Image (cartoon, rainbow, N blue to C red; front, side):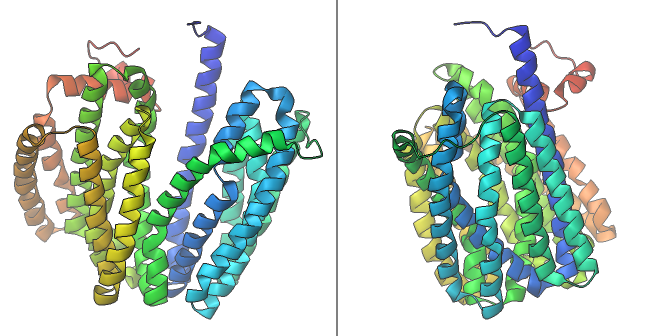
Length: 489
């Protein structure tokens, strides 16, 4: 095996840092924007916005067809073929974008008239964004991460600023989508020009010896992505179909919180852990890391669930406004979907590392079918609460399935769960009592839960936690203060 040179290591670190910085800035800005948008639009229009975005997300998966991974991999290996890959992807994804546009507008026929109109408008961005995404993939293959990161952060800032201006001028939802389309054009133009400056341009006509295997190789990835995004968006789509726009607005507000929690508290950890998991595969260390990461995620998820369940009102109203007070009851249930998902994601990632994607795909497909059936029954009987309850139930079943696939035994799990339950009972009672004085004091009482959790950790778990912290963004600064006799290479 050829050793990684110092120059290569520095380049990899610079690229990873650029992507991480862009991700953190973008995610934070978009979360804040969702809060501003919810207040500006009101619960009914925010419900329409959520329902439209749910279908748009499904359409985006169809348009992309998971070609990004194939293009980045192949162009990085064969840079001389970049132009032929670009032309092939342009033709293929233009056709797929048209199919996606028709598909989401067909699905929107079950929405009300106003929502259908916004789906038609929003769908235009599928084709606009496609050009920018193709350019983005080609630039990543050339390791131009700094360029792509600058463009991504700039376009998000421009989209938020322009949309906020149009909202202030009274344009409402049309202004939001006008800003999205215009800034999308600017993003695609900027990325296309950046790619052209590298000398890459489409080579006509289409080389089907490239296009055909590209589609064949991407098809299994697309199926998995389609199932995953449909599963994630099913709640909002079904709510918009069977319930009112206001109901969907309250659900969408809770969804924003759930996505933020998982992205910040789970995805970041798994991104940092993935290289270590990959290197450990095939050894006893791999099983150890999977079990400990799942346990860490459980501890985090239960703590978050406890806080949101007890103090949902005190969290929702300051963030979204008093009109969203009904969202609190939804969030009290929905937060446990996030908690379960954080543990599920660990086992899902382990199956990917083990190259057991078929097992994982089967779990996703069965989970989607069960969710659609259970959601259909519960949402018509119990409304939005029924929808999120179905999500929690099905996500729990999926967690049991991936846990069994990872050979977890009840003898190992049960004692740890019982000790955690004792910590939850004691800290939860203390937080509730403190919350009667003031909600902020009750949430601060979460430190009691944190203290109990830290007492549960064993020495080897502290060592792994130290390695994860050192691998995360800012880890170098943390390890200057926190010292442990642990090899973090």
